[in-house]
Length: 140
Image (tube, rainbow, N blue to C red; front, side, top):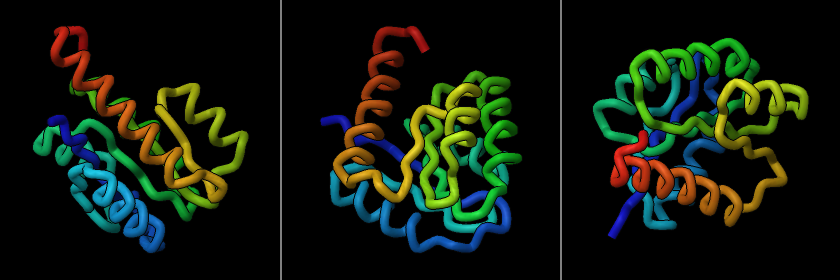
């Protein structure tokens, strides 16, 4: 049976990891394999972990505005490396304008305070399953 592999982390000096820990537990309880990297990560750290762990999705918890600078760098590095891994963001500070801008550059999904547990699990499971299907069919 397929078990999605998800990296959960915070970028930069953001230290507000309560939400990340809660989401990591939610995803584990939903049967996913979670690689929790915690605080103080860089785009290079997340890229290396995604490659080394063969992750389906990178989930970034955002509670400071550093995601605006780091997410484009991460997405560019993923593209340069030719990795097939989706990036999702979650947090209370992501504005609608920021969310639209981030989706436009390739962020797969964004979760805010009103996102339900079911929404988060369903979206991440679908993203992981789509990656696995691309890998099976050779269209990554």
